[in-house]
Length: 290
Image 1: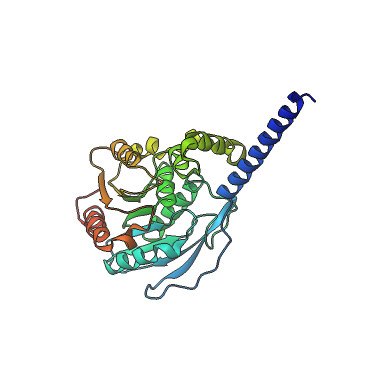
Image 2: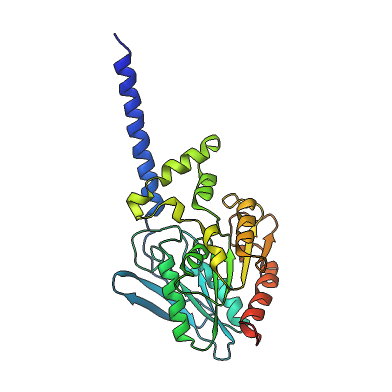
């Protein structure tokens, strides 16, 4: 019996299986989390808001209006999360004198949408939410605070609608790098990431080279504060330093010692307060600051 045809058949079967596994992994990566329904948070006087736009997903959010506020903060959550995760920050900021806007990104929480797009698709969400905040709180400065996916959405959306200041938490530099760090086989991380992300163009209409916050952050001509954990397994220290360099000399970077890819506010509330509150006061409340 000749082994050639058997080997070829086995190789073809392995290739088909590998393609099927990769396609399924891609499906899970972009599929939305189940749509949810939330009760209003306790301790934060919010009203429900739904932003509707033809041809775009409905975006569900909460707004807390502080009449004596000197500025407004828009909060966006991380991947696979929802606006509930930003409520502790919202309470801190509301008590510190700011009006608050917090939304579920498309494909998350109570918002519509069928896919998650690594912040690139969600740039439209960020632009719509910032535009709403500008209209709702006309005459006040607006700051953007985004975690991971939310941070990327703000960076990609800045070309359409910008904030007056940005707090970007756990932002990745390039999708390829952060995907490689999440790959299950350490010795083949780059290969796994490249193969997995090759299907993006077919699925989402854009490619991995489009999803590079490090190439976009330098165009944001506004104050930027980067927050990062120095033990983050998905955003390497080198990525954060590259973002800092790309953002320019005036950008600030604060490390959270020992923090992995976690909620930085919950991880170290005092360090978060010490970093974020003075930054917001300087850039939103003080006169003479653009």
